[in-house]
Length: 311
Length: 267
Image (cartoon, rainbow over all chains, first blue to last red):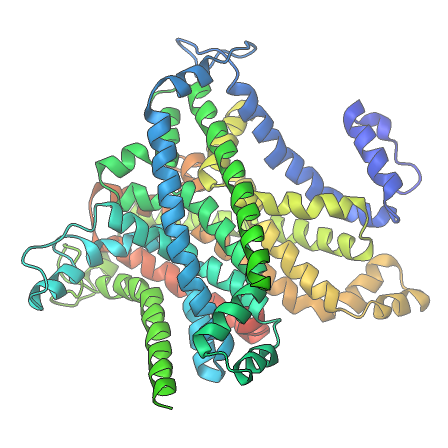
């Protein structure tokens, strides 16, 4: 394979890419080992996205899902002409921010607790994170239905304690969606922060306490800034997944949640209306929106994290 | 000292509350699977195995189990092969290709599965093999490979590469030296990576929902469509099986490595 390989069998742009990669790599064998995964990512990830983008730029068609070979921005025109988009963006960003804020606060606390604990407690806490992480989204959302529905467990408890006089409808409703979404992303957020904390030296916190910092203050001013890389990762993951949430609003939401969640809007366009140029345009807009907000969020956290360190 | 004790108590209450929040929903699912009535209520009034018996008579669930197993094994094989070879290549040469590869492999995890599902559905329809096992396996591989890849990079980075050089100096070819010098030291890592790939595939449902048909639907897909129609303790039965499988996987992975290391790999 080493000397006889001829790039001329490949299409020109790919051959060029291969050549430039080969020249910059020190070892050809290493490149050959990485090649299968590179090719897989190009074929299964990059190519589908380019096609998605291409279809979003075609004309609509009466009898097909879209009209191949045509160029048009009518898909985007329809996306921007109705207030469905504005509602979806508002709803998804609100859900994203709310779920992310709750998740990151709880996750930071829990990651700190795992880091500080030892032995069986530490294993139990880690286990409580890893098991939900390896459980399907369907179960994670479904489990909240018997707990939070109007005749569910939580309402029974609240009623019997006379805290409320009639059942509250958490599910279906926005409260249920937020709780479900937090539950879905929390394990990932906890582990992202924990893996950073695990590399940290407890001595710094002790030093702060010896110098007279109270315990909550030593955590806020010493631990949190140090854990900032993990907190940023946790925030980005929580936000990205909450903006694109599908299972929680789909199962725990009421009609309003379902009509406004971005993922459900896109799904409806794709499956029932058979207008692919509109559905793909929605998907492209959603992706752009997410990328922009992640960049802004990361920049804000970096800025904030930087300020925090010197405060 | 009084203040310190109060803080300790608050701290402990805090993390025990979160511990409960993390495990209670899963406990609810397991407990409701033993309910006698057909209504989903927690805690159930009476317990029985009636829904377990019904499960083993329902063709749709049983074939979904087969589908999940097939897709899971397929994903495990492709993701492990791709992830291990690429991580090995990246380890022996951290050149330009590696710099491109690492973020490229990671990005799919950050994109909402609904968008991946849509783009792949459109893609596979054009390629002419929508609704086949292969399309679901490839989609799941996209999600499982990053885990295998990063687990293996962490494993390879702790490996003493002088052993490989020694094997080569002693005259072993590239394949022989890999099998005899590297493999015995990293087999636990490969095993855990493969196990995670299988679990990821078993539990994933949004992409599977977009890519499967009635004959290739996996367990989470069937569960999802069932729940949307009516609440049935049967879903709890199936969920209990899925939770038990994950539980076993965690126990095995913990024995092969340790829970702390495993947790860090998952982030």
